[in-house]
Image 1 (tube, helix red, strand yellow):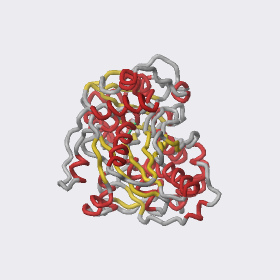
Image 2 (cartoon, protein in one colour):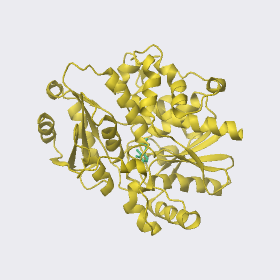
Image 3 (spheres, protein in one colour):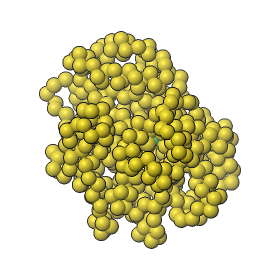
Length: 430
Ligand SMILES: *Cc1c(COP(=O)(O)O)cnc(C)c1O
């Protein structure tokens, strides 16, 4: 299988080429040149997440140097489950993606990417530095995935004061081959600095760099696996398609769900739930696509004004078809608060602010009379956002055991100015 650019002007890349380079040479995003359809019988007797992933991803690995390692990569990456649990209301489910080491769904992609990169990086030269700009969850997941991995370093850039206290602690607590830099600026500044560094050949002579952002093919592909496993399990037991509501920011998780459906998995409708950032809602209600600066909300990992995977959606479907196939529901902070408060009071259920957007969207759909079996996707554990959740429910949120296994050392992050010179100096320092 080869991977082609959404902009169509780059030479097709191998899987490992696409994973290593991140972005296609013409600035586009990599997509598989064909989407094979896997008949259901392909998955006969295939049940665990590792096994589903190994079967599902095989066509994409065919012919690549990583092909024979696929099962080992899946085994190494997916050391935790993605359970589908019933919610309080009949035929409503929760797909829990927060059982990894940093308690957010980013762990699936980051760990899979790390398992691939480890097998691709030549060990004779300088260590490779993974530079990652984060609004919270990505940085921790990437740090945890590459932590103590020989020949790799991680440098995290995060906006000082704009991530949750627990997120900030998580980002700074690793040490060893992980450095956290707190940038005096916004997430957009962090992203701009990372891009400048990644496209500076002079700097890269001293400090070879690679990225691990949301457009990375090595993060996108593994995210199809939990949708496949959940839909297959549901279809076997209930003989019905499973529909999904996906909390959405950069559209990485949502595009993975769409890919899983395109590959033939028994998935019905896919609805995107956003926070108050209006770019997607506007486009899907018929306006031109108009990216804009992000606004801060309670669901901070979805504070995106220019969704980086939008280009993949547009490559998959023409605009009119996109608007016909998919629905976007925007959930503002007041509705997020009310959902967290009410679902706890009524049913004892506790959701993180991102998951709460999907829950509210599902409630809205049911109110409109939508039928069928639906899963809201839970993208993070509520304990990660306890400063939002605990005051609303008036109770403590218990830490999951996964989060307690993170290194227990005092957190430390180095301050840097939102300025490329300052970042260059910081990177060259070690
Ligand atoms: C990253 C993230 C999202 C948004 O996912 P995208 O793939 O960017 O759409 C939602 N919730 C949480 C908790 C996240 O960390």
